[in-house]
Image (tube, rainbow, N blue to C red; front, side, top):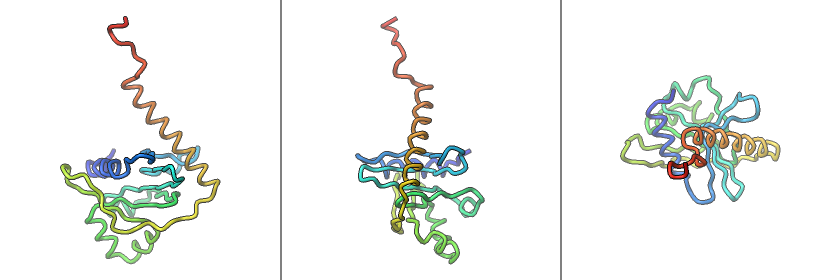
Length: 161
């Protein structure tokens, strides 16, 4: 079950990345066996893959849940409070030295994300890139399926009947 803070982070992240030529999906399951999941992933028309892991508490950050960073650029999306804890902990600073850090606004009326640390470009092999994009397509299809179960566009209107 997602917390309100996690949903707020997702909302901020969606607004931050929702641009022409950028395609995003939440909860992308990597590969066929579902052992890894990226909280949010984008693919842009310049062939760039970005992976985002949302963490709202230190316990969440240190949990045994797999953090998947398979993109050209990878980010942690955190609260300001959690960012301060990361900065104060040398082990966490080292662990996330290649990831960018995005801080999301915790205020419901103020959507926004601030980049406090740039992500370092990673070399993604062609095989990994193919797996990640294939996984994203499957996850996007899952989201479309959920949408059409609620509101199918092919439903007949009352006037046609």
